[in-house]
Length: 376
Image (cartoon, rainbow, N blue to C red; front, side):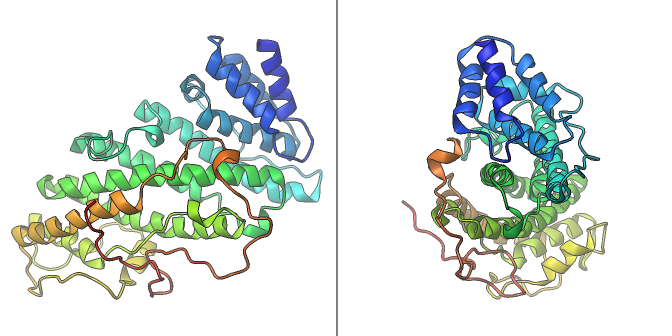
């Protein structure tokens, strides 16, 4: 079995400019899932392939590793997370062919994400995207300290994923397309975990100490910025042919929520005015100034007491629980291999994009703040 696995790994990472064949990946998954043999040999083969000077071989090795991290036995990702650095490709450049310049850029970005995915597993001691979700799930039941340690790890991994930043016209071959498909699926899992962590954070916010509130507010602002970037990523997913039923609708969050959080922190700091800048990146301040037209009522008094903030937030948080349950549920068979859940259209969509976002040129899309869903 070890010999056949080695052959499958070598064939999956040959110099043919096509994505790794499903049979080869299936053989590797079977090797990992159905044997007690060490995965170190397999990981070494794939790691060695990333030292090639050919962008084709390196990119296919990265796609294969990513596939095994997602669909293989946990022993594989656990092993690669123990390495100091899974890949060292930040200087990779294939000058042998014209396409090598463009693909090398995406190889560097992709390897950074896989390194962050591996590091996140080591820091959290699990793949957070596969953890149990819901009100009794892993993230929703974390205490404040655990949450404040976990969310920055998720944020870093999420940002690395979105930094792949490919346009539809750059997904020009099967290899980069296979990488994008894996990233798309990871983005949905990771955002689901991220969103659950934010819900838990908001639920605990009014019981936190001042320094914890400040840290939480910074995390929340970064979450808003990351979600804006996610909508752009999902637009690309739709344009390259991923079935729209597999693309979630990301809606706007009322601007008043951020104001409540800031007012509460101000009250802890014994200030009656709005918070002064405290290191928030300028880009996030710009995003937050584009508040949507639909916002809930908010006290007009310049001084918002902690009790008033808590009362307003309690009602909004109740809505968010319903929204999270009804609108951000995991798509069916999300953890299955790509070929089982992602249907590619025969031709790229030429119509207008219909994915909602937090902000879109200052106006809301058709997916703007929805009516509160009814209990079921």
